[in-house]
Figure (cartoon, helix red, strand yellow):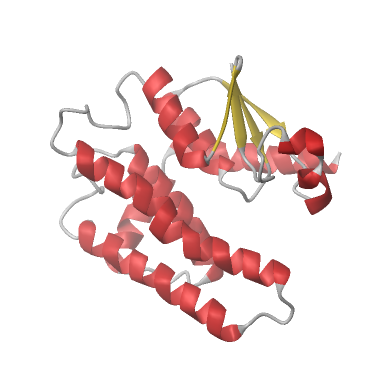
Length: 210
């Protein structure tokens, strides 16, 4: 069974969400996100840079949440949540999956890191990262202006990944989303799998308190 080593508030959320949407069994192993815990040799053996999440599947161990999500789709998804590789939309599927992390989530992550490392925070740096994230939101808004989902009428893991990052944007930048993006976010977060993922996140937090 898949085991997802996860800390609440980290990118393991998108992996859990994909499993929930696909109905793939998984187990969550809560991880203390403290710097001290993530610096331990035992955790660095799981992820050499000390980040969370990590996923195992039998003897297989991997990190990087987007790669983990793609692994779940390829191994257990039975063709769901992604187009076939010979489908004309497959290239755009890859594009938006990578955009979600490399272009959209990256400046949001920099805001988190900056606020953790610098006190007081440098206003110009935070403003620049917010501007970059907002530019990404407008690109997404344009992409879904004439469609329900990023690839058209069918939802894919790219939508899950984008909407995961959108949670952070709404928390750190603004809840006031452009109209087409708001529609996408509302459709995707209305999924029962989203509610189950939110519940799994809360349960993980409670286990860490125990």
